[in-house]
Length: 385
Image (cartoon, helix red, strand yellow):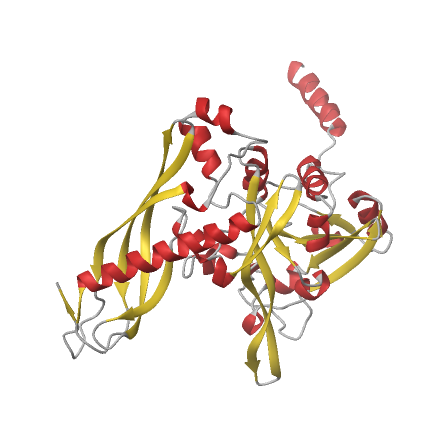
């Protein structure tokens, strides 16, 4: 009898379970992959890139190379949310934000000091994540968002959607995600740099000219807005000042005939020490790395290679620092180094989180090439100890 009563009760309670009745079916949603934010004439202009996962599926290339991988929606509003709700008027299905991968900020939205509003929108909404990559640009946002990766690779594997893949081969500008951006703007010196992206038209295919997205330099950003831009020739020093650099290169002249040699550098270890004397602060920088020699046409020594690396790396660090000072930025976050290691002195000298910096603020740069790897054996013995 008790078993019958228990069975009846279980049957009744089972009918009361809600299950997944309120879950939207995957095929009835649009998936937001990227977002572009602009600001013109007092209005936010939002560009939403909706990706077609059915076309991408599990392959690295779309199932149908002729099919569109994404479409771009555009709308305006007094707030970001207002512009998005305007976009919802023309969307056929529910938009899902849990797969958004990157966001591009226009020059105007950064100049207008609207970045805090963008960050507030992204961090408040429950579906977005802190792993979203963030970029700056001077180019039209719709042109950037419509570019298809080389060889028609999936948009999820593009340089903007998957920046760490190509960063392993050439570590120019360290990708920054939403989490690091928020931390950088909230801690001394309240400044960060974003990768500056643009369109590269230097590729050709059988169908004609192709386009790709390239990292063109850096965008210098503070909590008060845009500070400026540094192009790649002026920004090379940043890659030698972070442990996140995986692999990069220098090119310089070496040997009796002053031949040009390219050397790749990896396994970087960077240490910055503040030196305080009578409330005057300077910084000593110590960098350790390994060098890998590529093509050589005459006999050289490992000491010559080490001297080339030391000279070129120090030159790039100081040149980038000089260019950043002209924009009143603390590009190497030296203020934070003092804050972390001597907070009492930092409190005496800081102004809005930053300390005054000059070209002489970097006192010494010590570069140690721990190991020189000559690469594969050549038909000519080219490197001597």
